[in-house]
View 1 (tube, rainbow, N blue to C red):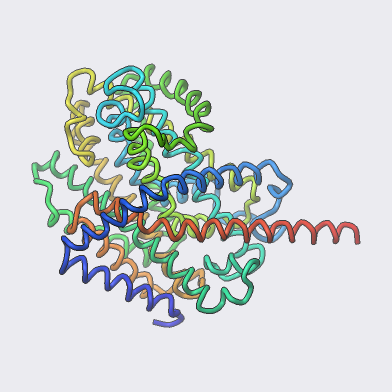
View 2 (view 1 turned 45 degrees about the horizontal axis):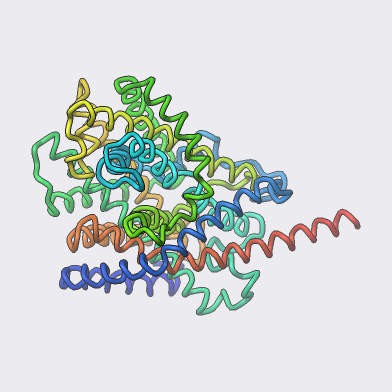
Length: 498
């Protein structure tokens, strides 16, 4: 394979070692990963809350500051993709499977099983269920993607740096980032990407399995999930072969059409007026709660403290683990936009779409539950299909949902192989297909191993572990980026005076 770097071979060796341990010592693998995850959650929960809040505050500062006028490219450069295609690609890569998996499951769980504060099943728990779901998929989450995508796009397209995480740290560390230290940074980024994507692929396989359980009566099993992963791997390899402007772009648009259709059907067949009222009300309570919810860790209430660790810290770790992959991909498709335009698009548009999605599916699921349909009693991966079972044409809707999960599955993995290829070929914007295929195989293999060793819990363990080291790199990236911005501004002021 031409043009691959030592980052490729070292990360490949790490992933191969994890795969071997997972296959031949699954119990030990699960025990060790669980112990590490528990330690990180208990001792670093406060850290996750602080840094994610910091990312959001910095994004808001850039939007309203003079820096917002800076273009991610040459001063007169035009965006490569239209707004609809740009939004579709960043949305499909960034949150697709998560929305489908948790669209009904999160609000139902927070209402009846794991309320953050109120007693289960109360009106207060109902309101909290939607509010905290908005919080986990709102501007905090998208600021994580926005920060890393912005920094990468800025250095790559404005300063001509290599499209690597290590290259963004050169303003602070100079030539050291072209040596072993830079390689270490890129290895951590690639490793976090593989684990983050593999985790989401595992969730996707579990939910497709849940759909087959409802549609065909097939039982939940690792072997069926393995077959699903193999089939999807073949599909995203084919999509990857067609390239960014064809396969990923077209499939992302298909995702949006399918998701819009299922959303519209659920909005119409569900309690429409109640959904719209709940959406409007929750937007208000969400905005009001941002200052306190951002840093709420409840040190004096063990139950609430554990809830924050199980939910908020897990979600922040999930978004951080996905950040190198989604950030690099969003940066790649955002050339030519200004910082202000970019951040408003990345923070607000996907957040509002997510809010509408959760209000529609969450409130419809809660309404069905309160009408006597036991949706809450189903496993998370089957909750969506349990809701559709209460609708007319339930089989057709469930089939479309399985297709949607599958296409989100393909675009996420497809985008990830492209990004991993870039990161392990010295930042090439057109990585070799052979490199992409290798990473496609390994991210699918890791997903299968995580499901084999401990199911969804193992997936969550892996996420929190992978996110911690990369979160530290993200903080350093932010400092490096700010230093470069200030240097740019001074240069511009000097040119104006001259």
